[in-house]
Image 1 (cartoon, rainbow, N blue to C red):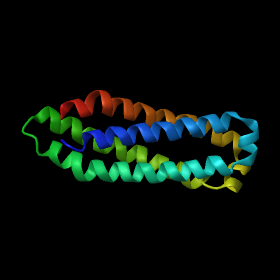
Image 2: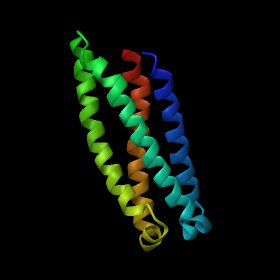
Image 3: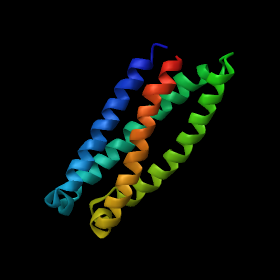
Image 4: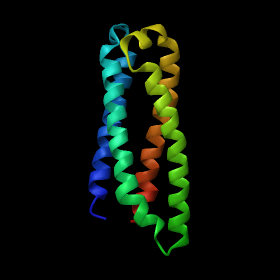
Length: 135
């Protein structure tokens, strides 16, 4: 698949944004500001949307057509799992995508961001380490 390098590049960009948001969240000054965090959450949402669309158009259709039942089964499981992660991220983004929303719920944001970012990082690591090796 020619698009694999693009998907891996997108993973790096997503990981960088997650790390940026984590770093900003740790800094009390930046957390009080909130603007940079909210901006990066919105950028992350856009990058995730592009990445998921790329997978849906260029990765999963080919994997689901595979004659290898293991490849098909793993692909179906990944699709289902990502749907759940995506829904959780959308809820997170809608809850914290502005400065005012962040400032109202700082402690809750810190707890929820740790959970959602852990989900995203684990998913990216599994895709890189398992799914993309099937190609």
